[in-house]
Amino acid sequence: MDWLTIGGGYLGGGQNLIVFINESLWPPDWGVIEPQAYPVCTAYPPFDFTCSTAWIGMTETIKIAFISTVFGTLVSLPISILASRNLNPIFITFPSRFILAACRSLPSIIWAIFFVILVGFGPLSGILAMTIYTVGYLGKLQYESIEGMSNIPLESADSMGLSKIEKAIGVVIPEQANNLISQTIFMFEYNVRHGTVIGIVGAGGIGYYINLYLKFLQYDKVLAYLIIIYSVVIIIDFISIYARSFFNDEGDINPPKWISVLIPQWIFDSR
Amino acid sequence: MDFTVVDIDELTIGYSKKNPLVEIPRLEISSGEIIAITGPSGVGKTTLIRTISGLVRPLKGKVSLFGKPFGVRPKRGSLGYIPQRLGLVRHASVLHNVKLGARAGNSNPYSIFPNSKIRDLCLDSIRRMGLSEKIYEPVRRLSGGQQRRVAIARTMAQSPKIILADEFLSELDEKTLEMVKTEVVEFVRKESSTLIVVEHDVSRAKSIADRMLVIDDGRVNPFISQTTALEVKK
Image 1 (cartoon, rainbow over the protein chains, first blue to last red):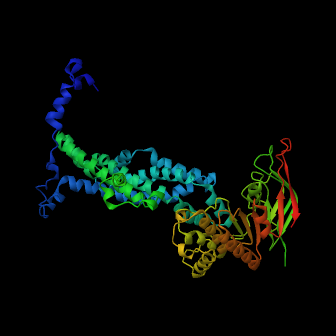
Image 2: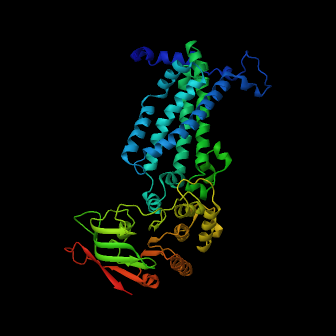
Image 3: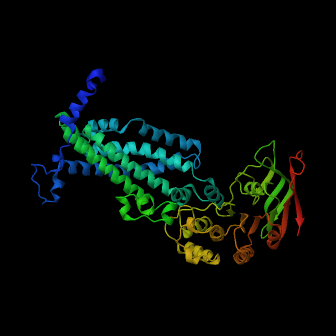
């Protein structure tokens, strides 16, 4: 890229960039949260924003992310248990790791392109793409955390003669529940962020609208979408902090309040 | 009828051949016996019971459980192990932890339906350890002594033929210690299990053991790398 052109040359001092921000990007066009002209909106104010492209796109992205996180977790957990070296011999861990690495080796956008070709445009290809990527990525995080767990509960389970399935369900999953839940929530947040990217290739969600307005060079609308995505990610982050606090030791001493979803807990604690 | 459950012959244990910890010429432990292994810390007491339980490979010699050589797993649920650091599932409830032991001793590995017999067994051993009030409490919220009692309850619910317990009476107050000791000894006598205890406190070890295995420390002379296990009658 020619940075000199963007910056307006050495002497220009970023003139072109300033012009771009002033004339095309700022202020963001909040028309994206107004109801669309067609189809006719059946909701009454103040709930008519639910007919806006931002709302429709964002909810679709969240739905895609949620479903693919659930499916991805269900598939990745058994594979990651098989892939853990402290639970299984190498001839089981190696093929399981191979499967996870295969799912992870392509980024979700490439999987999305692949599934758009295979099943067509729309959220289904987004769900399939993100589920496969979730299996690879989350599986890796899960087996790393299972391998990091203390060996002593596993040794006493071994001495007792518990089977591998009993060990996995009775010892490994409850002992690592905190990590597994936090990784799943992290994956959901990651999928929401990536849901916007895969929408650009036609796999549904808010990315579809971003792509649309990018093509029409309406950057102020694109900026409004980005701000909405950013806010949603922040809210998910707070919800994840709140949810995780039930599964760690700190939650026992200092149970979180609902308000901490919106305002960080430490503000209350510091009083 | 008493029969040999643990048979040790010319056993050398440790983590490296260059630096073996303990050498035991000959030791037979019969069913229904209570054996206490004592000695100063770092001498290899824990390594010895880890070797008996099959977790550490012996450097030399023979150790067999129920007549089966090292490496052959004993029958499911026939061996109970209370490690020094307990090995509990910290984020799960007391009942969940005890149920793991009860399942190992009393059900097949593929049973998935709730079993009232197992539940009763769990509740009984939790009651005997005085934790009836804490059944659904996560183990991480309990005190050190209470966690120790959960580990003992887990092993009691399992009712194994051999119990290997590493410092299982530490972190308990006088009153609880007496209660736990009485319950465990009574349990062992009733089930004719064998209890092998690692205990650094000699008087405490004497109070429960039929026989004591004193591992003498060889560290007085740095050139003596091996230590010798002496069998001492009480």
